[in-house]
Structures are given as structure tokens and as C-alpha cells.
Amino acid sequence: MRSRGTDGGLAHAAVRRLNALRPLSEEAVAALEQTILEGLFRAGPGEDLVAEGDRVDSVRVVLSGWLFRHKTLEDGRRQIVNFILPGETCDAHAYLLPMIDHSITTATAVAYAEIKRARFEKLTSSEPTLAEAFLCETALNNAIQREWAINLGRRVALEKVAHLFCEIYERLRPVGQVDGTSCSFPVTQMDLADATGLSVVHLNRTIQELRASGLITLRERTLTIPDLDALKSAALFSPGYLQLYR
Image (cartoon, rainbow, N blue to C red):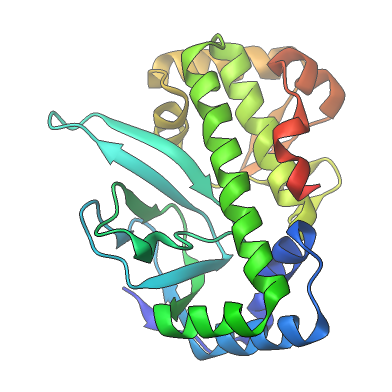
């Protein structure tokens, strides 16, 4: 169940991410932190923040926890088209469209800020560095989505899963969500299968292959990558598409 939050310190990840995309002025950081504090909410795992076909009238900035974007066919088959991580925005500028074309669901308990359209437009018009940072995020999300299309369409199973692990680790690093060679990975095997287009059985076999090769450890909702360069090589991972975020 969604509820109002009270912890203004949660803005840290969002500030770090946007600042990595476009250096923010001190005034912009202060304005963003205040806006987040005014619109802080929490939701439990498995809740839809947005359902396909909804009209969006606000911008949601994720402060903690994981969500995923997905579409579902009429027969119930689901495709996760991206994960939304701490510091990232669910739907910047989606309010410009008549309705949203996918659903956004919480994978874990989350804290997020909901910024109404008028407030968001006032914020970005008065703080140019924030406006540029949100535009950079849109461009980056488009680049990530293209890479996901390649992952689904061209890479083999081991490359798909290894590539997703590399990307998640690299996306979490700039917002302080990486601890040495480890990061949180709180998604189920079903979610991971739906994100890579594999069956759960095939996914499990692929993860076991990565483990046996010493490329990853996945235990208790934590991903450990002993040798990131080796995993990138196995995944054919090139971080160039994340260049705006490095």
C-alpha cells in the first residue's frame, strides 16, 4: 500500500545520478531536494505505480528500491523491458503523451518522489542545469533501450544474462549502490527470465554456467562480480552506450 514518506535524506541517489548526467548548481540541488521532500511516497513490492493506458500527470523519481517496466500479452506472457533503479526517473516528460504504453511495477519496497507536472515544469524552467539533466536522462534511457533490443534479439543466453549483470552494476555504481565487487540484485528468477526472454529453466542453467565459470556469485539478493572485465568479455559488453552516465 502506498503511503507518504518523511525522510528527506533519500534524495541522495537522485542528486548523484542527475549530477553525473549534467553538473548541477548548488541552487538546483537545493531546489531538487526540497521538491523531493514535498512529494515523498512509499510503496510495497508488487504494486503498480502506473498501468498501461493510464494518463500520467506527474514525474516519479525513485529514491530507493527497484521497479520494472513491462508489457503483457493477452495470453499473460510478460516482457520486462527495463529495470528502474535508485536515483532514476520512472517517467520524465511522459505527461506530454495522452497515455503511457507500458506498466511500471515495484520489484521491492520503494521510496519515490512524485512531482506534479506544474511543479516539475516550474523546477526545470527556473533551474537550467536540472532541465538539461532530465533531458540527458531521457537520451540515456533511449540508448539503454536500444541496447536491450540488441540483447533480446542477437545475444545468446549466456551473453544476455552476463550483459544485464554488467549493465546493472554499472548503473548502480555512480549513485553509490555498489560495495566493492558486489551490488544488490533483489529480483526473482522469473523477473530475470522475463527481462532476458528466456524460460526460467534456461535462465537457471545459464546462471549456473556463469557461476561454474567463476564469473558471478548470486546469493541472498546480492550479485558479486569477482572480475568485471572477464564478465564484460563474456557478455560482449561495451559501456559506450552509458557514456552520459559515467
